[in-house]
Image 1 (cartoon, rainbow over the protein chains, first blue to last red):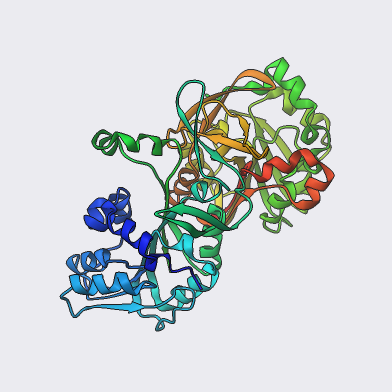
Image 2: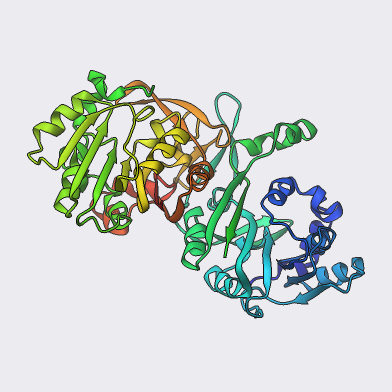
Length: 242
Length: 242
């Protein structure tokens, strides 16, 4: 079972204050890129794996999706999602993605934002998602980039020229990483970029696009603290076809 | 035009002494993995982009390939390749891969070992290689991993725990990198892993397998200096289908 850190009061309080929680998709720097990987949603059935407060579920409906299923392990987040949603075409379900059961050949898009790096049995989840997708359907997801999840102790250092560099180690050693982020002892799963892609290929997905997200010039101009995210890729974004 | 560093006397003298030059494929740590990505070669026509001393060309013939074309920018290396080859089914051609012209729908495998990170116009090369491949043919290549090509100044540092970490910066800034390796001023091209894959997809290739090579336990036992290569991936290996 995945650690349900979102129901930890300290983590939840911190998470609730993040720009992406307060402003929704507009508060997520990688959203414009991720949106660009999405298929046409008009009339489609959409699955959101790790839907949180339901921002994407509601956006998908605005983009024309016919039905949306949002799944999350955190009952706290789903309570807020439901309170913010007045739309009978959106269903929220509380479930652990490690064991989630899904109907067969039912969805046109499976979407997941910054959730898969928490999943221990990604092979199993992808197998279940693949079966739940219609032929030709899309899987679009973001995850923390393996360069970020790899290190034992994540840290920036400054070179002699004053520029920041990211220290990487343990890249080839996949598995659990313990992080202090919003709360102590957040558990993440490091896997290589190759593993993400090979798992997809072995499950019968075709890789359509891979993005190693860095902020744009405009984003850095608006928020200069983002500049360091040019030095290493922060997020991995993938679009695949069933 | 690609810098022809291989014809630089100092570089060539150093390169000639590398285990992979002296022992051939057996001297290349990543070879067993790369070999595992190759299709059946019996009766097939093979293209080796950057064939060097011709080790792979000769191996492909031993593996049953019907005809092999080895291309390299270095006349010095091809002179040695020809001297070591007594096989009319192997042809060596001196050409710059940036402008190499190839016959259409002619090859069953395009292979390239540690060469593509020297190529400036990879888009153009992949387009020409794609046209030269038969439908369903394979492209299998290795390149320096983008984590290795990215930094302005490649370097290992030691953490407080004495373990080595690799410093990464400039990952999102693609383009030329100047390295001192065997000779001063070796020019390489940094591109992200996403770019390698997206260029293939846009040219109509299907990604079959991606490997971020690290040494095996047995390899580290045989050569303990390899252990650090577990900390960051040294080589990118890709298999794609036309």
